[in-house]
Length: 73
Image (cartoon, rainbow, N blue to C red; front, top):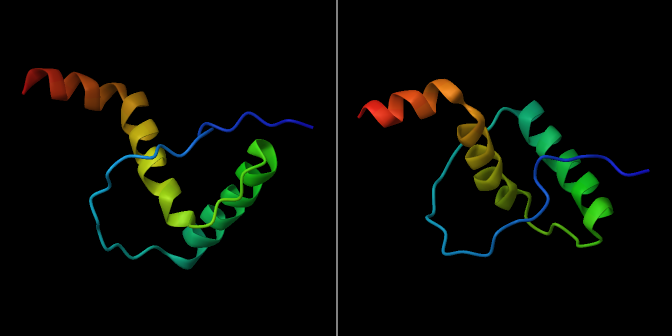
């Protein structure tokens, strides 16, 4: 059975290092997401933190209020 994940690939680009703290429940969900993505793509997600960037980018790209405010500035 195939699911329709919003994140389908992890881009291989030059990252900027950040240090963040996540609630335990969010990290648990992030790990679960990595497991599902690994099953769907056939590629093992070795570092779940690499999912955070694409997830934030997807969130911001779909936030209409953010896009509208960004155009104004």
